[in-house]
Amino acid sequence: MSLTLVVTLLLSVLVGVSLGLLGGGGSILTVPILAYVAGLEAKEAIAASLFVVGVTSAVSVVAHARNGRVRWRTGLIFGAAGMVGAFVGGLLGGYIPGAVLMIAFALMMLATAVAMIRGPRGSAAAPTTGDLPVLKVVLEGLVVGLVTGIVGAGGGFLVVPALVLLGGLPMSVAVGTSLLVIAMKSFAGLAGYLTTVQLDWPLVLGVTAAAVAGSFVGARLAGIVPEQALRKGFGLFVLAMAVFVLVQELAVPLWAVGALGGAVLAGAAVCWVVLPTCPLRRSRPAPA
Image (tube, rainbow, N blue to C red; front, side, top):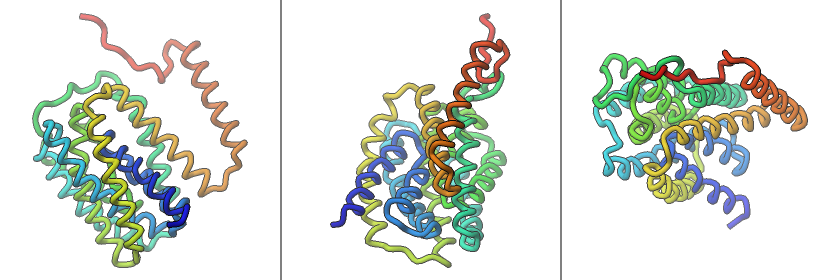
């Protein structure tokens, strides 16, 4: 067994931990691992990630369901609509240049990271205890499925924010429900990609086994980590991976990334300390 394969499998365990704990982030890790560590072409890495994430999500959702963290009706409707969008997106993705796909992948992660770190603007919707309206779920599922099918992501980093920020589900329930949606959409997107892409199945199955093992660890942690910390940690994780992918694809010098990051942090600090109306400050409801 080569060193590259060993490193790939070890890193794949983190894919499962991410899915089990956060309900997403699997493709965000799997695509870079397969593309930059295992050395697969971009389209092959994207297609393989759909299989890995789909199987891992299907296994991980069982543990969440046992703890009552899955909204089956919402998840099945969202997932069914997402499968249609993901299959069409997978067909389209096979004809888009790999570099374009990876850059689009990173830009979508950036937008999602900002939304999750910032949280709901103004007065956040109270968490719901029932299922979401069918039409709203179908429309969100179609859009998320199409976008994630094109870039080859299972969609947890879009499904979780959609369920939390738009649907008002508690974070822990959104995580469990998103795994059901991810599994359904991943296999639909994979079907679209397999019309134009061939996979290295021994490698894909090995990565999948490692990810499934990690998912059991993540599922155990999901009910322990505080919800606000989970949401912001998810956002920071997605942000870091987005920057990594952009640096790789655009060949940006590391010193430039460091300088830009320092400037952004300095600007954020000045905004937070000096401006009372800084948008980084979350508005809190006035006491009754």
